[in-house]
Length: 78
Image (tube, rainbow, N blue to C red):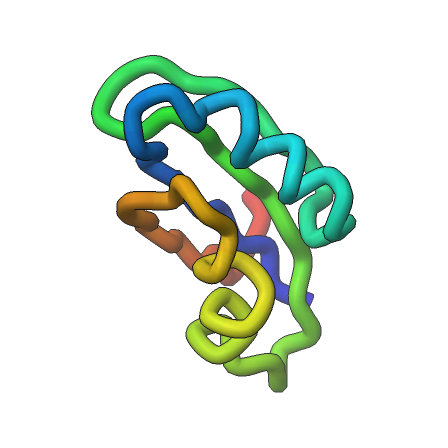
């Protein structure tokens, strides 16, 4: 399994609606509101063979209000 983090920037006035949709879809392990360049941080786990780009396109990026994402894939826990 890989642990990925997806930062999301939301369009103005959608910062509460976007996480509501993510929670309804059950596509996260943890979800946080953040400060800085991005509004939300989502943690999720994937089997190693999963194509993360396709998964994001199919399950996340069609949520209205998501303006931009930044995905960080991790490989080893220290």
